[in-house]
Image (cartoon, rainbow, N blue to C red):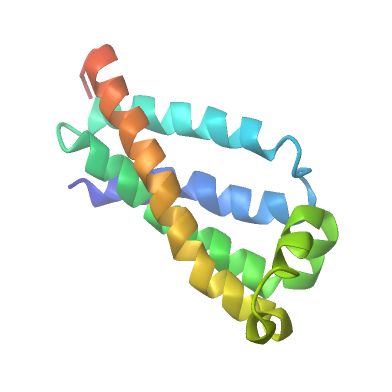
Length: 134
């Protein structure tokens, strides 16, 4: 595992963690993530030297830490700019409705795993399409 590569690529997630709080509207956020996933998959395919799926998966796991932390810390600003997140929290059990930060802390890793599977798949596919090299 190339941890320096994984950490470096996770900085996209750190940037998005702060950008999604108030700069990037939730309607176009998926486009940014798609571009980031394609870039990450390409870089992983070029530089990982193996275990492509696992490298992509771990980038998303670290991204999940950055994003969950930023969204929990700036919760009020985040939900003010992401109506769907506020609406979704209305369907939570009563305890989590009273403590939405905790709900985010619990749900964050599940999103990280889900997106990790996607980025891992992108990375694996890119490894079959991209010419390897440093």
